[in-house]
Image (tube, rainbow over all chains, first blue to last red; front, side, top):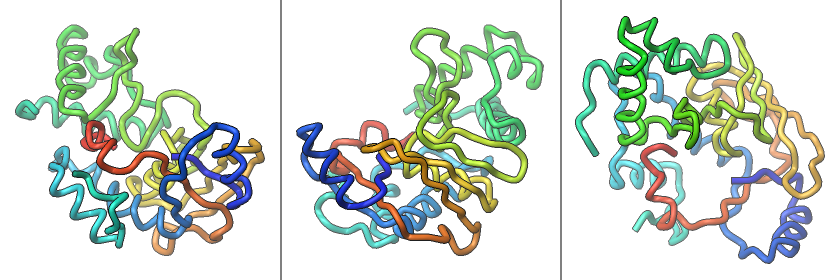
Length: 71
Length: 151
């Protein structure tokens, strides 16, 4: 997952790398996702998540469209 | 995914404590000293943690390469916390580090297109102080599930 200064920079990078456009998140949205995902990582009781548990986190932070479906 | 033993849990907690304190993961030798086990047993435990996707090991040295959201090697994302500075695996993880540490942080990142440096302040409660910039995720989620346990 890469960081870009602006939409113009992302567009140029995609063209130069002949890459399809994926999903774009604001910094605020990425913070919300990162916080939900990693807040308990240092907890001794933490365990790797099942697909269902991971999907629940994505849903919880509003990432519900097809791009974010784990399948 | 195999069962996670108490020893593996102790090692994982130590890995994160060590990273939080010094900014880099411990070597197998350091883990062995901390847990009072042989280096061979420490290496075997790291392999088991890797099977469970709790860490990713360097393909050659078999030392810790990534323990999400932390990277053992330099990346585009440097996170400065209260106790140390850290490398993040990706743009998602640069926010994952203050989240995992429960700390506010300053992030030095670079634009993937032009390499321009960008400094971001992140408050542990309210998040980034600016919304300038964006994150691009190339692959849809159904193509990254293989790594989701770690990610």
